Amino acid sequence: MSASRFAMNMVDQTRPLVQWKTRLADYGRRRHLSCPMDFETRAHFLEEPGEGWAEDPRRLHLQARESVRAGLRRECGSHNLETKIADFTAIGSKPFSVLSYHNQFFDHVRRSIVIGA
Image (cartoon, rainbow, N blue to C red; front, side, top):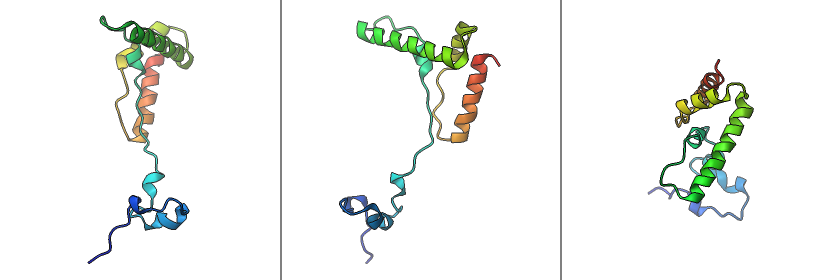
């Protein structure tokens, strides 16, 4: 019969990391790796608030919309800003992706379209 697998619930957290990390099946790597994912939903804030929205959510949405507009002005320039905002809204949110190189290329394409390149 094999010995039981050493798991996180068996770790003595009072001991230094190097003393127990190598005993874990993945050597504790899951605690130190980051996932290169990206998502961006600013385009949703550029939409008009809905008809039945309560006052507080409407106010917060309008504040967020002005913040996004100011950010796009800084990011893309103020020349033809309304066209840039319309293009940004038309493109919509970035699709969720965990492929870091895809995120970089997609961001370049989005920015190029928005600034009119």
